[in-house]
Image 1: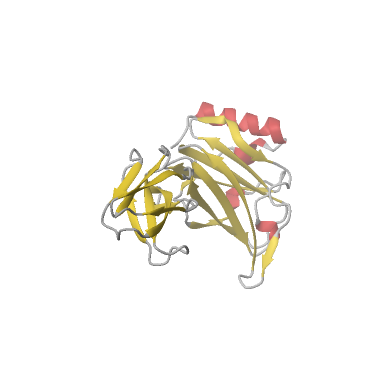
Image 2: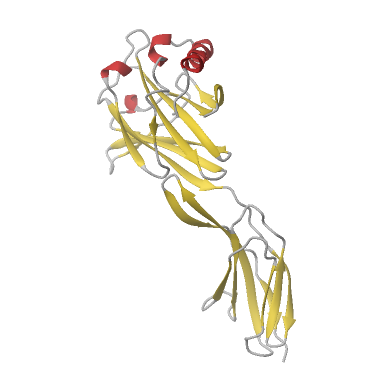
Length: 257
């Protein structure tokens, strides 16, 4: 999504005011942003026009869309610690004058980690955002040795866990109930004759409006362990995945004859 010239100029003035950066270094970052998928690594090669001799800065930006509310973890890696971004700003796509998160002057990566097996420096930050589209601005300061770094935006959706409110015995079965978790896609109920849940049977409830499950196809007068968890299906921005919540604590029930 490309913004008007007047909006870009407003952003430039804001950045200049907040961080004292040279305006010419920030003139084109919005229009040059790459639209990226989540959970994918991208190479960010530094080109000549990114360099500003007065500020000694290299700028990169990307545009991404969250298919649901969740946590974004930005990861970067480079052959040299000087190639990693030191400043960044995250903007909602429809409000580029008000950063949702920003860090300046070397506070981005406080302690760099070097991984000898990968042969690179890397670090990360995380932020929770609502569903929608965003711009991420990245800025490198100082001497850049190799002229590139890799980055990714990994995503984990926000959705609540759930616990069983009651499990009551039925003839050769039981009925389990729980409270609705509106942020989830659905639920999984699991039951087993064993406390460690080995050989458990898993039932998937496809709608989050369902708040109970009953079965009468079990052995009579037998003890069962029952638990539940939520799940969230995400599709979009390069993601087609099901995420699972934590299993609840187990409840026990002895089926009736």
